[in-house]
Image 1 (cartoon, rainbow over the protein chains, first blue to last red):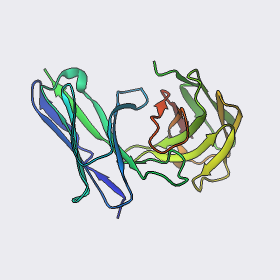
Image 2 (spheres, rainbow over the protein chains, first blue to last red; image 1 turned 135 degrees about the vertical axis):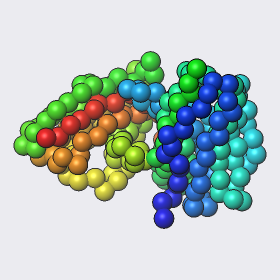
Image 3 (cartoon, each protein chain N blue to C red; image 1 turned 60 degrees about the vertical axis):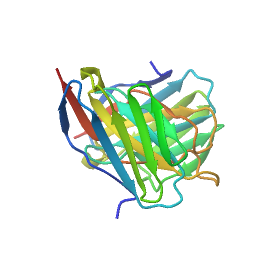
Length: 114
Length: 114
């Protein structure tokens, strides 16, 4: 079983739609959670991060974590064509000596069409 | 731009060639990383350097040889590669080496091994 599972899509939605991107994980040691966005021909860039269960909002983006179910989500409201990209979830434990060692999902390809 | 540059952006090499990938970060960070990104697979961490010392080597074959001459530069030396090594190679840097540090990625080098 993979430590992190992410539906690769592709996901295609009309402009203005609410998008839900999801990851499940199996490692109880994971305590912080990140979402990266990767545009075509670019490297990933950090979109949001959170440590705790619950919701964290940043503009049109909401990151949700449910540690009891080992499930995280990223919601995009009022999606725009400029949101078209690959979205990667990433997570890791806190403390210890795992220097910056993140475990990534395989990414979900999102296309928002006008 | 993220402050992390990579050269070359594209590379085609035969299995008997020797080549090097270069990464430079202009952010004053102390940790640098090499990742491999293959189609439909999660990002795979290859190497981590902290203050020019290799602190992580994720069971990478010896045909990949990293070098970190100073905290701003990171190289990946390649020799006798296999076609399955074709992928996008991403460099990243972070301020420190704690797991929750934000990693800033370069645009990657697209490698094709013939």
